[in-house]
Image 1 (spheres, rainbow, N blue to C red):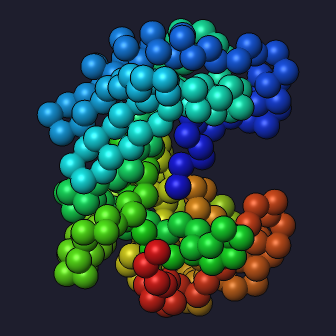
Image 2: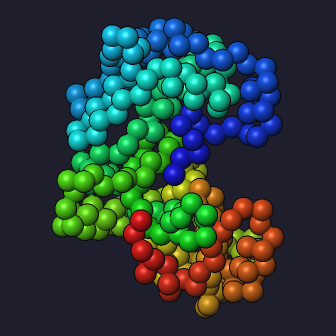
Length: 256
């Protein structure tokens, strides 16, 4: 759901960094991690560096049922490929972002998950409902652990649907088009579609009547609402993949 393990960057900036920036040094990453990880840890989130004789150091992340281990050499290579500059500040920011994008635990999904729409396939031809947990300006999708049973899945998804009703979204009307957006976490724009009839009422209150409203969903972007013809033209002109759906079919999309 998030742009990448170290945040988003423009294509041009990423290319320039790959040409100009020195690779992230493993020793520098180790020094930064030694200072930063204790500040990011909590009672439930355990972060540490584990030295493996003859095999280098790994970053160990453990939170409830989720456990990750990544070699510092691999993490440094990933940062270098992503164009992260080899400065202390840049490495620290990238490492902080990597930790923020860690897998969502079942407990966090149950406590604060929000239902949103995201891509259901790698080819980006279909969307479906998923549970996302917001961390700062990020939304990280929940992948249920193997221990999560069907009843727990139902409870988490039901609770996330309820929270989606409370997400504050901006509505902007431009001619025959209405746009729903979130101020800081773009993927939350689709949360309102758990109750598309309420979206229809909210748009009608502005004076725009859309009795046969279709929605143009581009995950991580504002949701566009319009009559079928306008929606199709908008989707056809867009440079990004999107899915156009009649409003009545949105709630029946599958969970992913």
